[in-house]
Image (cartoon, rainbow, N blue to C red; front, side, top):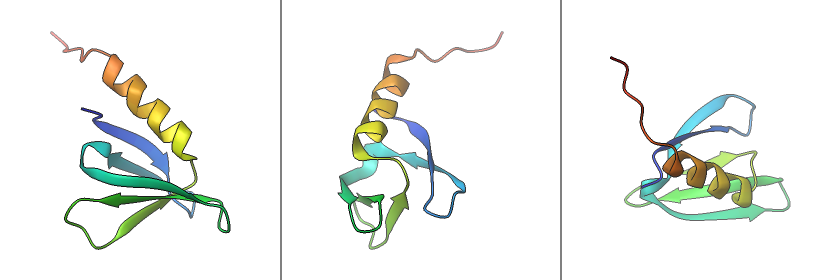
Length: 70
């Protein structure tokens, strides 16, 4: 379970993506962006981070325990 991670949209705005539903992540060398495709969706998300950075962020998110405030 990857959870939600914060990435940077192609235009520079922050975007939150849940990789649990992602089918593929690939690098578009021509546009220097990653394209994330999701199950059941016809649209894709285009972000500035490389696939390796996205997967590393997802791994870190998964390793962090959820902390509840008392």
